Length: 298
Image 1 (cartoon, rainbow, N blue to C red):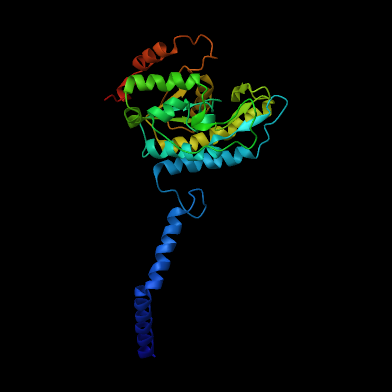
Image 2: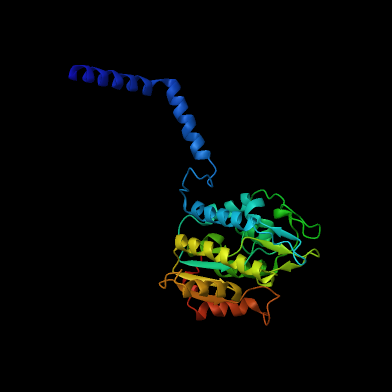
């Protein structure tokens, strides 16, 4: 009996050896390996491997959960999600500038009509994205596009004032985009842009009814907590009071580790009260709050 088992094992090993050296089997293995590498990173069967993909996976799950909510109402006629229709350009931003955890994480509120809604990049003023960050990529159309709020991607000729101010300041301070992104990254709390039929931009803080606004906040905060765990920054900088409030709620419920410092810089939007001369005020804020040490220059 023992001799039979030994003989059978030897035969099996010989078969495996011959099979492994078979050119057809090698070709199949190579094809399978290529298929796995090309598999969409959101597939439940494959774990994201690169740092940026871990964050993008969180964004995709956040977008999927928000998509199940109907925000359309008497005040909201269209909801744009650039994480979906501008994924090509959005992922180019992530892939180029989010190869690892950064000490400083700026967190904005949600896409602006001529910024991230066009480019998939937070505060994504087109010239900043195209010429300073040197990003390129295709941008499709949102599920429901308003004629008064067309999406033209990098061909958009309208200026996103918040993005022009924000990225303009970072360019002034750091020179090359690589210098800014060496220690910093910019992320958004909410991936959705909301518009009235007239084209008026509706911020998350302005959403009605109240229960929809609360649900939006809960879902976004849940995934923001998960993203912060992955980002693991030394310092979180909320851009504007709305984001500051959401971050503070996470601190109060012990969802963010108290080792992570938190500060708030004024939002660059011209809609914000007393927001004239934002550039000079922001530069002084960065100095006063000891953030300039992270601003790498050439």
